[in-house]
Image 1 (cartoon, rainbow, N blue to C red):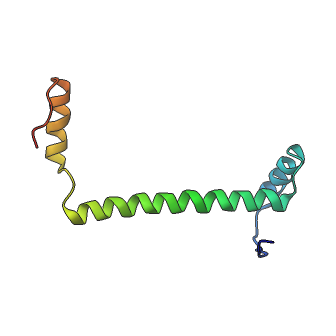
Image 2 (cartoon, rainbow, N blue to C red; image 1 turned 120 degrees about the vertical axis):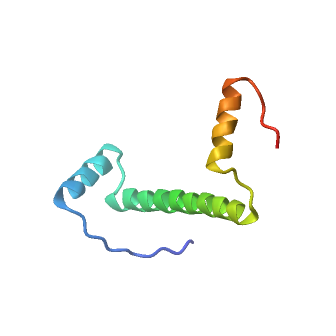
Image 3 (cartoon, one colour; image 1 turned 45 degrees about the vertical axis):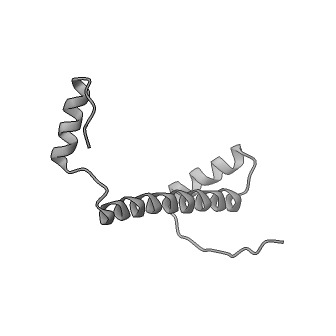
Length: 85
């Protein structure tokens, strides 16, 4: 059996009413919906922070284009040319 933990959070009345309506329409409990929302949030934030870290690592390696290089690339694409590295 997997371990779980109880988390307490305060939400405004409108959010609580919306949550309860959603739970009822999906035939799920409030707790189930909150757990799924937290799982989704944690997954998306983890992926986003990994994406940012990947970009920061690329910058540290010098693997990036300057603004001027990017503008030159875009202009060359419009002319049907490829950038010469």
